[in-house]
Amino acid sequence: MNEDGAAFDRRMLEALICPVTHATLKHDADRQELISPSASLAFPIRNGIPVMLVDEARKID
Image 1 (cartoon, rainbow, N blue to C red):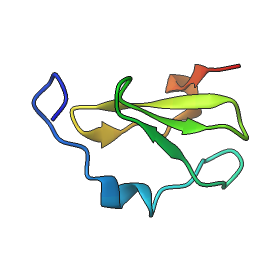
Image 2 (image 1 turned 90 degrees about the vertical axis):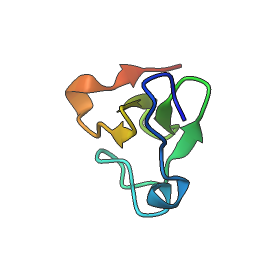
Image 3 (image 1 turned 60 degrees about the vertical axis):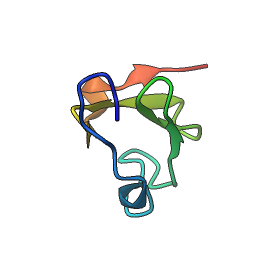
Image 4 (image 1 turned 180 degrees about the vertical axis):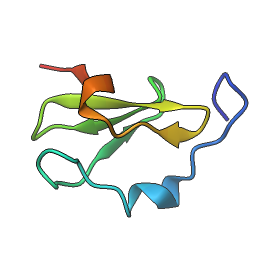
């Protein structure tokens, strides 16, 4: 469970891909994000729901 009390279903990760590169994503449980190394973006997970909008993603190095 995250701090909002909602659990992220790790099985959902297998079905999700990066909307930019169509590559697989990595789950960062500590930051509650889905990471796309190929696009250098981190997509937030809010209330257990991945927000797969590029405008909402955080740029990573």
